[in-house]
Length: 395
Image (cartoon, rainbow, N blue to C red; front, side, top):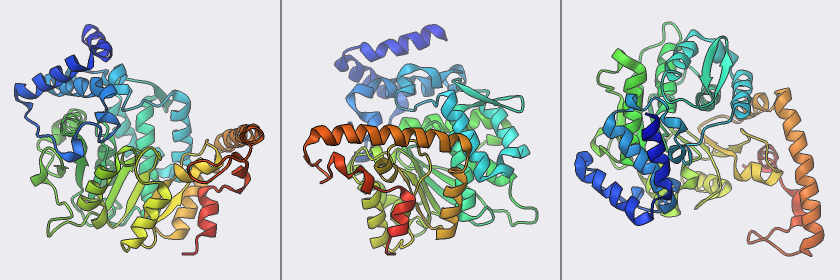
């Protein structure tokens, strides 16, 4: 296994033409995916030429079977796109998930899920109650804690979920399995349909991962759809039954180019009753432009929420979580809980001081020159956090 992983890492320095040929050869071996405009070269971070090594790794894993790659998350080419959280950030996710939904983190359902996810993938961990919990799992647990408290644990938010940018399928497992195990006693049972929206080979990898960690309970995964590799398994907005209960994206949507963002808007987002989208402000639409577009489409409660602070004040809006389908008091409550942990408050205060000092120096040397967004380095004091933006929101 070590030799295979070394070989994959070396693919990062192979000439681009050779990599392209290798990917084409793998496609001809029977994987048979048809490239669409949503998965074309350059459509996302994962499809940029410099990241061809990532797709090569994924193709190899699904060809061999994911269980033959027990440490796949640690492969450099894979980790370059699906980033592993360092232990300190994993600890931060543990603290904030506990602050938002302590009952979730303390539940037997969480223990079962953490044990299963620790068996496959490798990478850094954050220990808890004798378990070695992968740091990336803490990110997905934190998201799920937010979802339960933004939309109501007893609501139907998880009945028909679509996610753009699925990683290796862990968010899907957390929403489906923990939702089923934590359902209130006496609550009516419902199917938790989950549609994966990613490169076809990544959708396949996620399905293999879900089967591997679920074992005998994953004989057919009847509630799993794959938008780009098996469109007939999904209910897109174009179908008569298109009506997603929730749209999720952890950074990936904001890393797509604007054309692909529009594709997913047409296929998934416009008919999603709720949404939770963590933004990176890399490409295409910004957080506040996205909010405006959602409101113009009838989702009048769309807003922004600070969720992963630790950046300069203006960036907290640009990299905020865009939420719709939640009441204003629930948004305030989740954000307040997440920001209440002493460790986070300390780190945020330290970052704020560094940001102020940086902008003072930049202001002194910029001589009032404006950025493409019309701001100058001297405008820092007027910039807002997501909470301040909501306070000034005329909605």
